[in-house]
Amino acid sequence: MTTEIWQLSESELLADAADVSHRIQLMEARRIALVSEIDTRVSREKLGFPGPAGWLTSTTLLTPSKATKIVALGRGMKNFPDIADAVNTGVMTIDHAALILTFAETPPKNLPQEGRDIARQAMITAATGPCARTDRIREAITKLKDTYGGNKPPPEDTDRNELFASRTLNGRLALKGDFDAITGEKLLAALSPLTEPQPAADGTQDERSPALRRAEAFGHILDRYLASSNRPTEGGEKPHLNLHISLKDLTDLRSTMNADSDSENGSTATESDNNSRPATADRGAYRDLFGDGTTVGWLPWMGPLTRETSRQLACDCLLTAIVMDENGSPINLARTARTVTAKQKRALTARDHGCAFPGCGKPAAWTEGHHIWHWTDGGPTDMNNLVLLCGFHHRLIHHSDWEVFIGTDNHPWFVPPATVDPYRQPRQSHARAGPHIT
Image 1 (tube, rainbow, N blue to C red):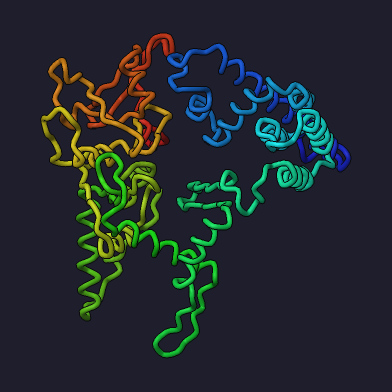
Image 2: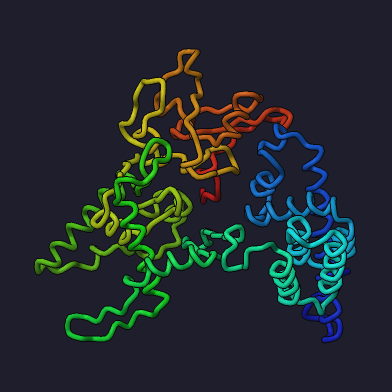
């Protein structure tokens, strides 16, 4: 019988924690090996995705970046058995393995093969055991790249440029970039006049931090770009903001704005006029906690917005407002034509948020409208016959036994083939899947 943690002695606590950590390393190595075998043997139709990463994300708690990393490790370690041995024996973390594997797959241009092997072995040694330090490995990689990376010095090497944009769990966007000197100079030159401290009219000092001033300046640059007339198009339209909002929330928002206007004119708001709702144990009050109705706004890239931010966006920006019914389906946007119009694409984006295939959710800008009842068979280009799908899942629906239909909730539902689910139970679209309190 397993001893309760609180009953363990101090030495037993330390030993068990170390043992569990080692076993986790071994289990992670086994997961990489299993995914690598899936990558080799299981068909795309069986997975329902272009590769194991999408399947992992849709069936486990792994994030897309973590799943992609696992697949990349499985593929890469086949070519470097020494890295695989260190991972499989649990003496090196998969994070260090990924770092060394990236170097091994893309070594400096002028580093000879013998030097590559020696360097890789040295890095594996440095990454082995509890004394391993990531910064030492990165330092070695940087030195090798600077010494053998080619004729261009690091400040002028544009091949090393990177920009990462990741949406965080709390709905923000985290940026990380690494640019050559010229690109960096352009960015700093554009930011400079917009980041100077701006004292108030009464001479009060600007209390914004330099980081906040840079962030606001970056937003100002984006505003100017989106307002320009020569920006490129995507999906037949120039980049702009779309605000998705339900009819109920739109009415509530207008009521709130009118109430605020009355307040500014001298009216006194009562306690019942505010947006707060009393706490209650009634389960019905929380029924739609994970639905689309708890916030008045939704942006295709970034997701839900608060009531106040939706109001600010409606006041300050030129945007397309797409109104939806209580089921989150766009209102009054039916059209019979061969091609999905820009207006319909906006409506589909409001309903599906992106690729609707369960577990996918690729951004709407990367999708296309699929006719559920094929156009060549007489199917109309109407909202109740369209669904957004990325290129892969569009092809999958056309060339496999996966089926899709619009349910009574006016949203897409997908039926897997018997090879995936013998019972062929319908699955909700990606945007609709998730916890719902009943």
